Length: 363
Image (tube, rainbow, N blue to C red; front, side, top):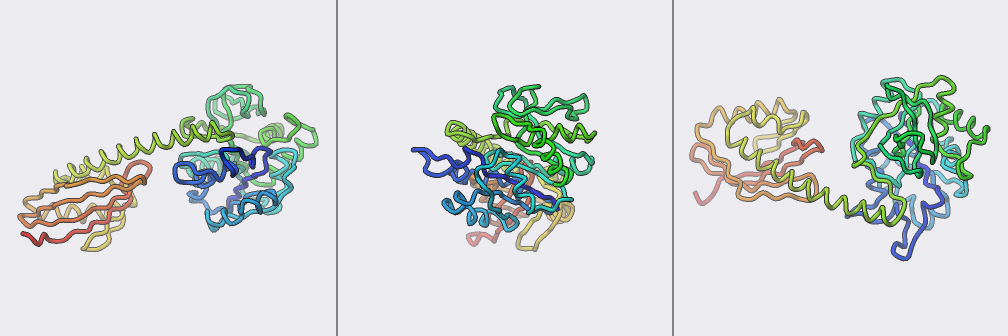
C-alpha cells in the first residue's frame, strides 16, 4: 500500500480575494476545480494507495472540504490538524498517525498540477530501492526548493528557497517508507533547520543523505508542471489549458481522419498502430477485447470483402478524449450507415471504439 499525504495547511492556501471568494484549490479552471486537476495523477495511480489530506478544521468546515474530497474518490480521506504549524514538515508529521509507517510515502500538494502520468516514475522509485526521490525541472527563482545531483542524477544536497543548482523540486517527494520521513524530519527539527521561520520537506533529504541513503532525482517536462500560488498563475494556467485543449482537439481530429484512410485501405498493418494494447471494440457482432483479438476480427472483415468503401460524412471532436465518426460503409455493394464513438488515450491511441451501424433503408 502506497501512502500519499497532502498537507493543505500553508499560510496562503486558504487566502481569498475580491475576485475569488473561495481558496484557489476550489477555483474553477476551464470546467474543473483546481483540486480535481491536482488530484488526478494520484487518482490514476495503478498502485494500491490511500490518499490522506491534512486539513485545518476551521477551513475544512467553512468550505465543506471533507465533502469535496469524498466526491473526488473513495480512497481519499481527511484528517484534522492545527492550521498554525511551523511549516509543511510539521503539518506532515501531525498527520503521520494516519499512515502505514513501513509502507512507501509520497508527499505532494493540491496547489500544483502534474499534468502527466506519474505511474512509471513512482514505480521506478520503488523498483530502484531508493530511500527517497523527487521530481525536478529547470529553474533558478529562489521561491523553489532545489537539489544538487551527481552524474547519475542522485541527489547530493537539498536546499529550501536557495538556488544551489538549476534543478528545482516539483513539489513531490517520495520516501521508501513513512518511517524514514518521520526520522529525517525529526532530525531536521532537532537541528532547527528552518527557512523563513518554517520547517520544510526538502531539507529532510539531507538527513537521508547523511545516513548514506540514496535520493534520486527524475527530470520532468517543465511545460507539464503548474504551480498555482496566486491569481496570475491561476489565470496563466487556465489560458494554457484552453490552448492545449484546442491543440489536442485538432490532433485528435486529424488522427481520426488518418484512421478513416487506414480502414479504407483494407490494410490491417496500417490500422494496428492506432490501437492500444488493451483496445476494446464493440459492434453489433459482439465485444472484442485486446489488440490481437480486435486485429483478428477486423482482418476477417477485410478478407471476406472484395469491395470496401468507408466514407466519413462527419467527424466530430469533443472537448474530452473522444471523437465521433458519422459514416457510410459499403461492403460488396451493401450500404450501411452508422456512428463510431472512439475513446483515445494520452498517447493518442484508441482505447475503445463503439460502432453503431444498420443497413440503409433507402437502398
